[in-house]
Length: 387
Image 1 (spheres, rainbow, N blue to C red):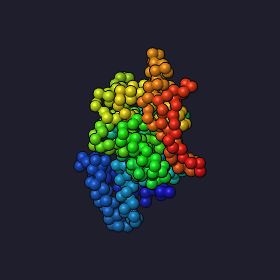
Image 2: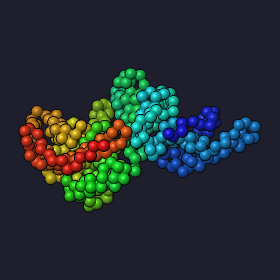
Image 3: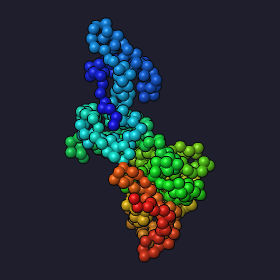
Image 4: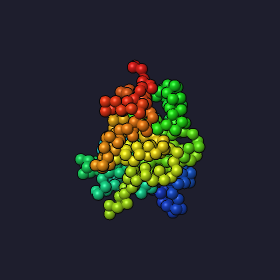
């Protein structure tokens, strides 16, 4: 467990942090953009504090390095949460109320020794949203945004919540960016990695299914990393979450409506725009609504795709992909959608999170292209052996 966030002395920390802010403000230095300068200033002010303390016979700070780290977190980071955001083992942090802060490590949750105030939570959220162009207020009580490090922020405020702001920060750890990393982590065996890599290199359309926190987005990112370097990839997300890099990559995200209720950009629009960008593969971060129709139509134009969907099994994922397009309008019926899904989806990979926190691929199926008894027929390519 990481140590609790605690400064050597409240008055010292507040004083030093305020001096650092004043110096950076005077020099017009943004600590987020120029962390080296911020660190030098913080170190100088900590030394100055100790020099003054010695001159006046007051208590000095023994651990100067710790105070520098904490002051930097207060000035340019996210205060009490920064140590956990920096911790490579922490996957997610959430606040149910200011004195109820939790984190997940390797899929297992724990309560953190952190106590905030309502105003401190509000200040943290405002700082997190500062560079995103997104907002949260009474007219827009929900917000999703990407933090500079790629983490996803989700906030809900009263009166949607009972009293306190509910905050989730989901980190996407760099340790699992490729299929080999997931093999080494025990998510699936080498033969599954080879199967999935071959599917991506051959331009197959792959759907990743599973419950929340089962590792869908992490696996999707690793699959994209397995694509041929010559492929032009266009990703579509409500909020940037996919931590991927490729030689020819364009990433698109949706946009919230303005205060006047205008300017919203939905996933359906983004999928359509992606088709105009000469993609070799379209990636939809998560399919949950009528954008499923646009994805299925895109796949049926011959453009391979990849996406995630919440489902209890790979076959449930296929059923969901045939149902979601019906939300697009009354002129869409299952008689059109089901054959379209059956012929365009090549592989469905299902992820699970076990009670131990372990995340793994539990099953992989491949649709045959046939409809049998009103269901998309699929053959099993892999099933994780029972423990």
